[in-house]
Every structure is written in structure tokens, then in C-alpha cells.
Picture 1 (cartoon, one colour):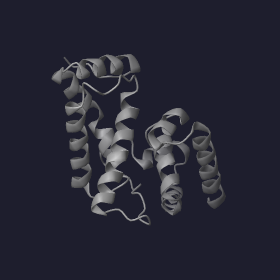
Picture 2 (cartoon, one colour):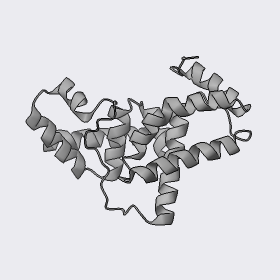
Picture 3 (tube, rainbow, N blue to C red):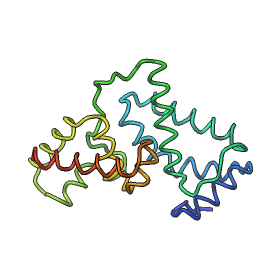
Picture 4 (tube, one colour):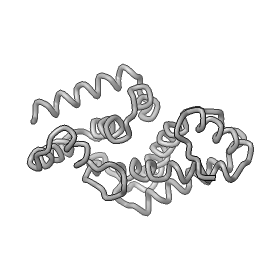
Length: 186
């Protein structure tokens, strides 16, 4: 059985099966979203093992609470938001992430589209890539997160609002201001 959850209907069906105790459906969800969760979690902590532990804890908690978790057609957004909360709770508990720490937006060789591939589509210049990376690192954590979710996870404003726990207009404003700030700097 090689099918993957590619759309919301597949996700919703898999989620319902998982909630009913289907461990195969749960495994498919975990395998399909692990890479995205790890990539997203790595933006909050450079400690890869910490991120892996948070993802594992998240899936263990989901399995334990599967009967009380609600239905969702947006499994990816649910998982990203849950991981974000878990990392922040664990980080605060362990005091590993300071408020001044920057999110890590360096290019990764993880198989996902790297920042280079995204920039090359827009501009082929190596100098432009280096400048853009430097400018992204100067953004606030919140600005870096909205850029990551929009351009690296290809989420729309509604999904970003759900993940970040802010309103859709706040996402639009943050995204607009962040892009304007990057344009002004470049």
C-alpha cells in the first residue's frame, strides 16, 4: 500500500482511521509528515535530537489521546501547530531557546527544496542569494517564521494563521511588512 495523503480528503480519511485505532493509518501519517515536521522544528532549535524528541513525543501523545482528538481535514497544519506548541513548551521548560536566538534558515540538504532553489527561481545570482540569507537572518523570529511557512511550506494565509495562532489579517500584515522590509533592504 504505497498511497500517500496528497489532499485534504485523503488526510481526513487517514485521520479518522487513526482516531479509530488504525495503527497503519497512524504510521502513514507519521511517515508522510515527518520530514516537514523536522524541517519546521529545526527552525526553532538547532538541536536536531531535541527536535526529533519533540516530534516523537508529539506522535506518542497523539496516539495516546487519539480517541479524544477532534476530526480535521488539515492534518499538516494540525501537526505543525502542535509541534510548534510542543517545542516552545519544552524549550521554556528546559530554557534552551533564548528570545534573541535566530531561527536557522540556512540551506539544508534534506531533500526538500532548499533556499537556493527558491531564490534561483527568482534570481540566479549567487550574490543575491547570500544577501537574501543575510537579510532573512536580520528579521525578527516571527518574520522569519511567516516567511518560512509561506515560501518554504507553501501555506496560504489561513493555514499560517492556524499554525502561528494569529488572525488571518495579522498574517497578511506581517507578511506584507516583512516582504516590504526585505525589498527595502535589498
